[in-house]
Length: 350
Image: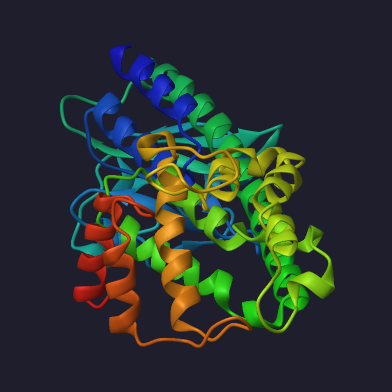
């Protein structure tokens, strides 16, 4: 039961689809004390494919697809019934091709359907119990696990779909920026690339990196609220026009604040023009008061801006850009981020 409790916590605390699947099958192997276990899901044609297969022969097993009704797993999926098979080699439903390809001998199998809202999405199975035979007690435990896995998979799938919708929205907003500002062509994507290169050398979680990537793409989204005659003006801006331009971080924060899935990236958008010494805008934050995500974007944004031509300055060489950023370390930029940026540059990541 300790395994079930631990797994329940893990599954309920993560929306990472790949993580949920692997942890679920690892738990199944441990719970049933078996040699191998696998998760098979239905594809768009109704065939079962091995999404996760643990055990010595897992990679070989993953090459196969089963029709509904084919093999023990296919039978369970088609009939929506759990099954214990104690002498697999003698069972006419057993699919021997996988054993032959893997050089493996399946002795006994326990297999259960996975359901989401009364719809079969796949099956989960354990193979070759190490001590004794699979029992109905194992089946009851496995059923509890299967129910948790199905819910977690559904939650993770829905989360991925929401993320994809958010990504499409982000791409659309990014395109809107570029259409408004001819000098921004490719800038959001380049800032994203630089930010991800910097992130490679920082202890960021996958979720931190995801938020950084979204904020990097959308860091200038507030410019859609700036008048064209200012945004696309040739030559230097007046003091008044600069003040208007400096409102774009606040405007951007307001825009993404209206989209629930994007609210966590507000700090990156709102504060990427803050300076480490407190002289930036919009709020004059100082040092580590500035969110990390914004400190990373600040370096990436500035580097890309100064190596590319703009209406108000010529583009400079990469060496000159690095020198300028280095010169402003501790005043405009976080020294730690500049160090990591230089490391990424030296290693060819930028």
